[in-house]
Amino acid sequence: MTDHTTRPLAQDELRAANTLFRGTLHVAPSTDEEWTRTVASYQPGRTLGVLDAELIGTARSFDSALTVPGGARVPLGSVTGVGVRADRTRRGVLTELMRAQLGDFADRGLVAANLYASEGLIYGRFGYGVATLARKCVVDRRRATVRAGAPVGGEVELLDLETAKARLPEIYDAFGGDRPGGMSRSEYWWPGLFRQLQRSESPVVTVLHHGASGIDGYVVYHSARPNPVDPAVLRVEEFHTATPEAYAQLWRFLLGVDLIDSIEVSALPTDDPVELLFTDPRAVKVTDTWDETWLRLVDVPGALAARERGDTELVIEVTDPVLPVNSGRYLVSRDAVTRTEASPQLSMGVDVLAMIYLGTWRPSALASVGRVEVADAEVARRADLLFSTRSAAWCGTFF
Image (cartoon, rainbow, N blue to C red; front, side):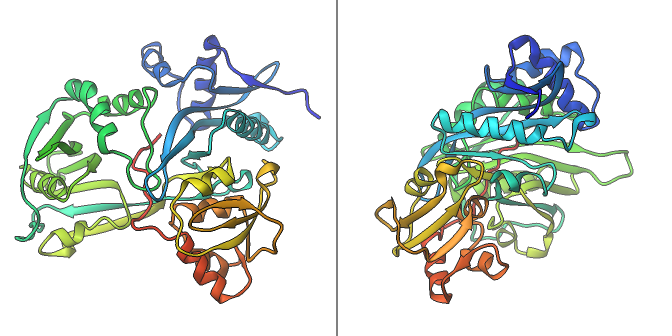
C-alpha cells in the first residue's frame, strides 16, 4: 500500500505535468509562449498524475487508430509524456501509472496501445513489445540517379509551412498510415509536428505530388548547413506516398534541389526500396536501424480477430499479468478466434505476442531465442504462416 493518489489531471494541472516530464528529459520548463502552443497537444482527460502532496509522476495519451495486417483499423491509445520525478524513481510510481492507464484503456474499449520508448528496459514488463522498426538513410545526391525504368507521371506542388498546416491533416488522412503499424493522426498530434518544424532555422518546404486520382504523396523537408564550409544536408521529416509514381517523382524532386550534398531520411520502412530506385545502390547508406514503436495489446482476442491471418490454425496460450482477462488459450485460424481449453501449441507473454502481431518478428525466430515456447518445428513453421504479412510494419508517426 502507498499514500499515492493516481488520477486524471485537471486542465490547470497540465502545465505542472509538462514541466515534470521535461525535467525527466533534462529540459527546462516551457516558457509562457511555448506552453500556449504545447497545450493544444493535450487531449482533455487523458493526462494521468501520481500525487503525494504534489505531483511526482505523469503519463498522457491521445486517441488514435492502428492499422493491422489486412488493412483493418482498431482503436488505439498512443502513450507519451511519461515521467517520474527524479527523487521518486524506483518506488513503484511508474507501475502505478502504467497499470492505471492500461486499465483505463481496457475500460474504454481500446484494442491496443503504442509508444516510443526512451529506454529499452522499461516497458516490456508492462506488456509492450517492439512491433515496428525504422531505418535512417543518407543519400549522396551527387551520386544518386533515378533509374530510367522507374515510374513517371504527375505534377508537384510546393507549400510553405503555414499553408501546409491547413492542408496536411486531410492529405495524410487520405492515404497515410496504411501500412501495418501505421496510425491515424488526431487534432492533438499535429500541433507537435508543427512546433518542431517551426524551430528550423531554414525554410520548411512541403512538396505534394498530384497523380491521376489526386494527391497521392508528400514530402516535408528543410536544409541544414552548420557553417559555410560544411556539406549541406536536406533533412526529410515526412515522406508518405500511396503510388509508385508519387514515390519516384518525389525522389526526383529531392535530387533536383540545388546546393545540397546529401539527403537524410530519419525514418523509412525496413523494406523501403530506395536503393533499388537508383542506378548506383551504393549512393544510399543505411546509418541506423532502430526500434520504432512498441505495441501493447489491450484486448488480445479483439486484436487477433481484427488482423488478417494465414491459412492454418493453432492453439496459442497467452500470459498477461497486468490485464489478466487476456490470459488464456485461443484457437486462432483464418476464419475465427475463440477461447479454448485445448492444449497449447505455442505459448508466450503478451509482450511477445505484440512483437509477432504486426509481422515484424517471426514466431520461429522468437522461439529460437527462448521468447516463445513451441511444440515442435512444424508448429513454428505454421505460426510463421499464421502471422505472415505482405509488407514490413512501420508507423512513420513520431509522438
